[in-house]
Amino acid sequence: MQGRRAALFENRLDCRNGEWMPLDDEGGEFRGDAWCHRQRLPHTLILAVNHETHFKGWATPGVVPPGAHSQVVVPPDETLDAISGHFRIYQLRNGHRFSSDDVLTAWYGTTWVPSARRVLDLGSGIGSVGMIAAWRLPGAAFVTIEAQEESVRLARKSALYNGLSDRYEIRAGDFRDAGAIAPEERFDLVLGSPPYFPTGTGIEGDHPQKVACRFELRGDVRDYARVAAAHLAAGGLFTCVFPEEQRSRVASAAAAASLVIVRRRPVVFNEGKPPLIGLFAMMKSIDLPERLHSQSWVEPPLIIRAADGSVHREYAALKVSVGFPP
Image 1 (tube, one colour):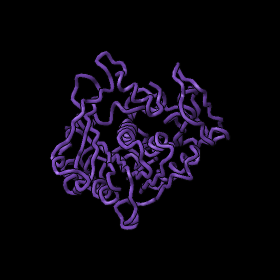
Image 2 (cartoon, rainbow, N blue to C red; image 1 turned 120 degrees about the vertical axis):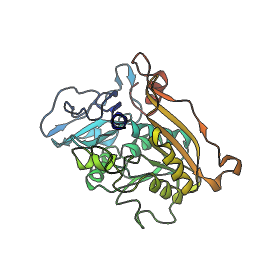
Image 3 (cartoon, rainbow, N blue to C red; image 1 turned 90 degrees about the horizontal axis):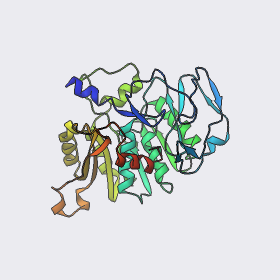
Image 4 (cartoon, rainbow, N blue to C red; image 1 turned 135 degrees about the vertical axis):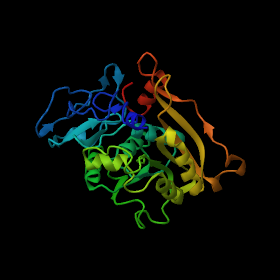
């Protein structure tokens, strides 16, 4: 069980170069524009980020954000890293780093609700899920809620850099608290990348920001489902990521919140091995005919790495669709 749990922290997206590396292998982290600058930068840094149109034959899509047109100050304990297209995200060098969970959650939700006008991101952390989604949904308004003050600070810096401030509200607080979301607020799409380890079930890590993102210190998937269900607009969708071996917890959370898992997709990090995580899309039961209440469409597994170690062709296409190099 411990080995299985540890495996869930591996094969995450290393935002230095868009390739898959262990999430905790950050000793050689690079600073600045992660796809164009390769030098080590050990001190506080002022840089003009390089937004070239191509990277290794891949044309970088999307608008160039306003932050790219000014000098950027990056403190020594932070990095400014490439995310979707020309978007960038601030992260703590030794804190929580965005991962494949975030990329896949944003991709899955925006793929199945491409016309979303209002989007809610629960437990939004440093903003990686929300900002990838915002890059894919340029006409949508976002509300994100995060309890960790340091993560909120970083997310606000990233939103300003990416020119999202006029449609991207970042609220500091616990989304479970009354008043965090007004009772009448409704959203076409709700996103969540919840922590999925109960406290005391593993090594919690060396940074408090990491611990809160991995372990259920402020609720669990049941809270995500309950709050999502309360604020879904008619026909709206809640999407989240969770370990495949804990899929029963997602099913129980959905049932308790009167949600139906309309579709799900297992994710295999290495071809030939069992899936480690799954993507789940849920709707309110009252928005579906009764015959669908007990049916879930299980999609073919999404494979990240092919048997020969190369990036699987479908995953390469997926990365392009969210503004990452294939």
